[in-house]
Image (cartoon, rainbow over all chains, first blue to last red; front, top):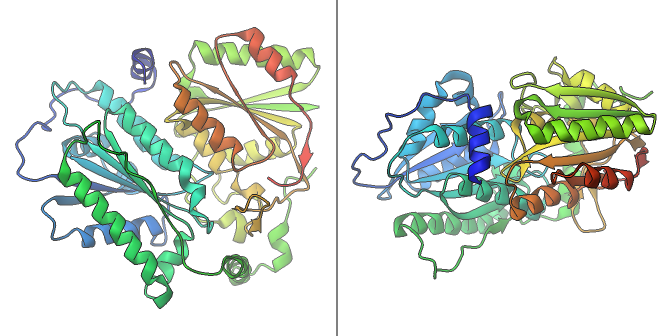
Length: 258
Length: 186
């Protein structure tokens, strides 16, 4: 973001305040990592929430502390300024979200857009350089669909002068979560744990030197025949609709036809 | 013919005013009826991924707010122009709510495309042309490319333009685009 754009965002669009009184320069013995679960789902456990819990459990014995933030609950219930102040104190964020139209969902966009305003408004003499990682999941089996959404988090990182690490991209996200205990998922979970270890090591290594290689995104999907996955998916919609007293034909309604 | 402009009331700067004035003049010159809906902060709910628009009330969002009017007018237009503040290389928060809640207009099922990627099939036989006009002060080449990829890499029938401080350039680019409804893949 250029100075001009920063000025514009600050003057026209910032609704988060007030300025000052950050405690982020406090002394800390260990790194602090915030897991940001940004699923907008209300009534069921989401893939993102499950993944946030998975990270928390996987890193429970590490030398850094882990905190979880749920974006939907934060926006609904909390004083966002307080949430953003907590984020300012962290050393790293892992932003976990579902793919919506090939980028972030609206709710996460609002949360991060306003966080950038808070960041720009906050008078902070010395900022610690944070690290940011993305975990994106989609219902499509091809994890490559998440590539642009990972780039969006990289772009966000640049706006807050943070260092982007890399992204974990999950295709067939609902199946990875739903069938997590199935034998055919073992390899995927081995790869997920390898990726989480990479994040851990990168956090503990501190600021990356210019000569160090950029970390590559990790693309994972369920080890399951794609045609069968797509067929199960379609049948699932019909089954769910029937539970709502809808016949298959009614799923094709065109309410806005002329 | 009918055109619909959709824009974000949160980012009304000089660029926004210039783009809007070009569009008003462009469509007036073509004698195309134009409607314009601005979306302000907190005016549209976030899509919660409930899929009610697929399996409870197919084709319509189950949340009651301005989205019903937007989708009704959008689906009955020949061309829809989204005036998009670019934030992190994607849509601003208000515009992202408009985009996310377009979901009722496609079907829940999957179709495998020639490029090897999966997508949802269309609900309707044809759709308005979609034109995205991105604007932001100091837009980086990287964010510009990202905005193009988000819109064009995975979807057909979406054109992407950028406001580059030139009314003439935007006018010319708009003139080169098809403004009629299109069928086929989304």
